[in-house]
Image 1 (cartoon, rainbow over the protein chains, first blue to last red):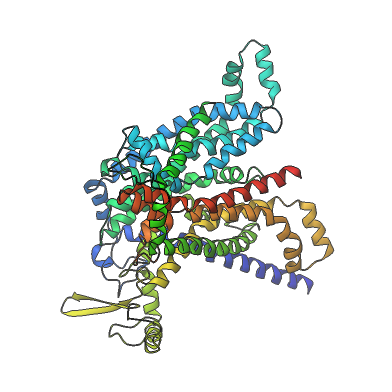
Image 2 (spheres, each protein chain N blue to C red):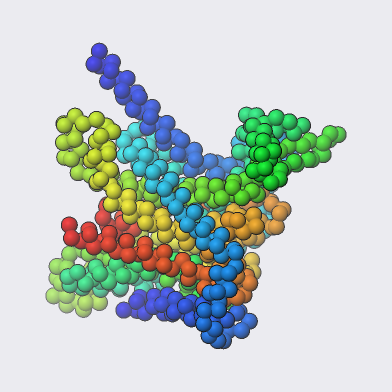
Length: 286
Length: 320
């Protein structure tokens, strides 16, 4: 009797859990599923929304829209621009954030943490507040309508966030190790380079991934500061060049969005817990 | 420290510049800053679009964050359990946060399209939308009766699309999700919820898993009912971390420009306009930097409040 009750309750419990997660998973993933399906739909199939099921193929799938995307549009240029911007921003971020995080972590007492929090708060100043005066900075640097403007601007939010992440990381590296290295005849800089950095490697890898992700997610600066299609990164390129007035190239548009979105999603997913523990100031270990 | 210098140069200077701009009459054509006092602010506030945008900013943010916070607690409680296939569900649920928001919104653009919307297809199949002859359908009936009562002005709820197919002309009806005020506002809120729910859920989930095991064991031993245990033990324990998730949600949603820029561009007739996108239209596209800066600065007081709350949260943590 009790045993039967137990089984029944377990079934009810799992039933409820699966019901909840399925509902939310469908809500979350439906747009991506639709994009994947639409991307391979043939014109005849797609243009009959009255009678054809939009959720699946009523006629054989085709890759002509993907070919169109790759051959007739500047899709690959957008991807190239995004990669280029990403790589340079990651570089700049590492060069500035690593020594900053290191010195914060070695400041005595609460001082380091206070400064660290201040730097983190800068990350919270949104680009939407700054992009208008930033246009002055961009024209001062003579980088109007250039992807290099984004290379200069993006570190303003990647450095604060990554400094904070690295700061948390470097604090966990015991001081004794580098003091030992300094006793052995290394300078402080040498000790940092040869002892601390190798130990902080996982943290540095996280920083590389995040600064890259943050540049891919950014939208308003790119929208405001790149106007010719040869300079646009992927988010802006897809949403402004492939959406032309009221004439949508739906299948190509969907393909363009989903084939960049999914690989990014997979990589980001792997590192998400570190992002969360950064956001919550290490209050929880994600 | 060079990092601090970089940040000050590229954040502090623009911020000061932005305040200077808002009190002047700068345009992209005429970059000299001539101070005009509060004139720019007056011009901005007098514009009826300003009010809609300001109200919308709060409307989108508050509605979506109430939903996000509630739903994320439910979802996090489910994900805190162990069950087969969990990683797969987790991956799907996180998708909206880990993909670039502009690209995700493109998917919604299709799903809410005037002609192709799959939601319309489902409604039509279920008989809620009018059929080919324009007869029947719950939504159709509803708008008709609202119209006869004078509550809806025109027949905008349903648009007749006709296509010549072979020898006959086929017509069908659509909701026009992004074409009507109410459904457009609802759609924007839905996309914000979709976007922010994953982040909030992982943060709450992290809070849940950090509850010490002995507390959970003690509760189990005491034989308290599930609901009571949740409201009296779990909820107070995850309240602080849920609070910080909500604060981040408030910042991200309040200052977001991407959803509006991709989904509605503020349409119909500026009904879904928000401050940051309006600032972009005025300041960059309309080349009136002064007005753009002034509009954007209206978001600042709100952000300041949030920042203070974040700081208080941190300092409280330092005491304990």
